[in-house]
Structure formats: structure tokens, C-alpha cells
Image 1 (cartoon, rainbow, N blue to C red):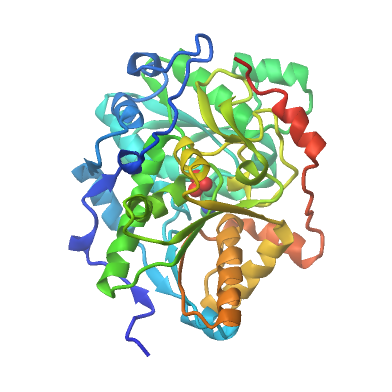
Image 2: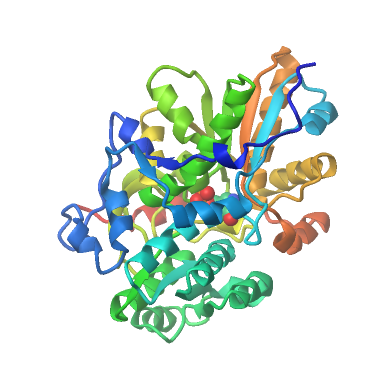
Length: 454
Ligand SMILES: *Cc1c(COP(=O)(O)O)cnc(C)c1O
């Protein structure tokens, strides 16, 4: 047997010193954000009231390959990075597969997921600009938790609009956010114009991400010294998350491992976009022949059943339009326990790569995902987040195919977080109460009808 250790660690000196901008390698660049009023491409000046200046520069830059990681961010990364790349020897043995399975585990920090990688960067640039604070939305709370940690590190105020159903049903992450000093408001709320409008039109609504975004943006643009920050979808977030892929690449190189299949779950696309960044570059350059697979829930299938079109990023239609694979901004997915995968759209970078045929996508039903999660937990010793378990499910499917063909493929997947705050979901699974609702074509069509037409 080869002498590959269970965990391939990088030393502190081997931590990547710059983020990699995958857009610089793309032959067809992602489509620009458009002004929802004029349908012109958003300029830096258009975006300045909403976003931090340096983040806007990163957002609009399709050409610069590397962005040096500022020392303050690097120092913070060193507290919890590099994250381990684990060889899943125990899972391979349990499955009796010749495949070599590796996973990059991002759950080793208090916020419990990869989202901290971008939260700390965004908080840093807000602080550097001399701002008082930032606003954001959160669904199940992973992003809000990460951002509240990052803001407390840089002593910034943090106002989080949390989807009401999660605020009420998931008190744990809400309280972690408050530990770190964030103010958390259930959305829709009566603290904003857009929130009051939504409450009037839909009394008793339990909220949605799109609606919480609209509230957070309104608060940012109407309070001096505040800007809005977002935890996924945007180009800048994928840039920060490239740290995942760069570390994975460096760790694999230590043992001359070449990936054959790279798999990640896709909500807004940030962890997957980060994980694949250097590998997709090599694929575009013809140096790597790996399959790259996005995994999404069957209840919210943006890639596999969505359309590639300009759409609103939020329900209130105040944000710029983005060209992406989307289910329509009115789409409200059936209750699904992978809260981080319930967004209606997908990163414009990944959308373009998918449209160019450079990556694949599959959707998986919820109960299958939890079966895979439990099989993984029992042998690998990590309780995975439901979102991450979408990648586990497809990695296990690929490893099972290798058992049939006898191929020793190198399968690499992103394990984005832990599931300690998702035990109600595991409880539903154990009690046979999990819902596997899949939207009908008619339901999707109704939502496509709301796409902006121009
Ligand atoms: C938010 C989240 C995701 C999905 O977000 P992406 O932007 O698609 O990466 C996946 N896993 C976990 C644990 C999350 O918190």
C-alpha cells in the first residue's frame, strides 16, 4: 500500500499566500451584473453604495490571476487553516472499493463551515475602509455565524437578517451570533420598507433568503458607514474560497496524486467554486482531465432544471441582475434540511463553466443524502452537515461504480461543514418523517414566468 497518511496537512509556511481568480483563466467570462433599472452593466460607482470598495474591485476583475492575501487575514487564517485533506481509508474499506477517496474538511472552526474564509476577508476590507459595520442575511445561520465571528475580530458592528422560520426553529446558531455581538432580526421584519411591504402582501410568511437579502441591502444603503456583504454567489466570494482549492492542490501534489473526479455541493456555488479553482484552470488549459461535479438538492435544482438567464438576486428586486442558472427569484423550495442549498440561483462563474460543458451537475433526493451522511459518520468519525452530505452521496456513488469496474480512481470531495446544529434534521430522518418533495415542471414554469424580460 502506498504511504499516503490519513491526513495530509500543510505546514504554516505552505499556506497559500494569494487567492486565485479562476475568471482569469476562463475563455468565456461570466456575464456582468446589470443595473435592474437601466439594464446597463454595473460600474464600480453603481456598486459603491452597497458594497465595500476593494470587494467591488475584486468583483469586477476578470483578469488578475492572483490577489495577495493581506497579512491581517492571513494571521486569522492561521488560527484554523490549513484544513486537513483526509484520505477516507475507513470509508473505502467499508465500501470495499478500489477507489481512493479524499475529502477536504472545512468544519474545524466554531462557525462550522467554509463560510469563515470569505467572512474574514469581507470584514477586513470593511474595516480598512473605515466603515462602522456591515449588514447581511442568513438562512439557517452558517453565514451569519461566520460573519459575526469575523466582525467581532475586527470590532465591526454586524446586523444580521435571519429568515424567520430559522430564527424561530433554530435558536442555536442565532445565539452563537449573539455571543459574537451581532444583532439578529427575524425577516421579514417591520424595521425596513421592503420588509413591511412583504409582510403586508404575505401576512404570516416565514420568510425566505431573497427577502432577507432585500432587507439587509436596504439597511446598508440607508445607514451611513454601513455596507452589505454576501456569503456566496458573488465572484469575490469564490475568489476568497479559492483557498480551499489551493490547499487541496498543494496537499495532493505532495504525494503526486492527480484527481480523476472532483465533487462538491452547490448552493450559491462558493465552496465548489473555491475547491475547483486551480483544477478547473488546469482543465481549461488542457493539463487535467478530471470530471467536476456539482451536487444540488432535488428540491432546489438550479443547475439541473433551471434556466440560464438574467434574474433578480432577491425577492425585493433591489439587487443587481445576475446571469445565472436560476429557478426564478420567486421560487420557494419545499422545506429541506440543507438550508445552505436553498438559494434559487447559482454563481455566475459556475453557471458559465457549466454552460460551456466544463462541469457536470446532479441532483439528489434528501433521504438518500441522509443515508449517505450516516454511513459516512459511522466510519469516518465526522458528523457531516446536510449540505456537505450531498457531496458525500455522489462521492460514494462514484466509489461504488469503481467497485464494479475495478478502477482505482482518485475521488476528491469538499466536506464543507459539521452537522452539530442539524440534529433536528437527523431526528426527522431517523423517525421516517423526512420530506422528499420535488417541484413539478408546472411549479418551476410558474416561477420562470417571473424572470425579468428584456
Ligand atoms: C452555505 C453552505 C453550503 C453551500 O454554500 P455554497 O456557497 O454553495 O458553498 C454548503 N455547505 C455548508 C456547510 C454551508 O454552510
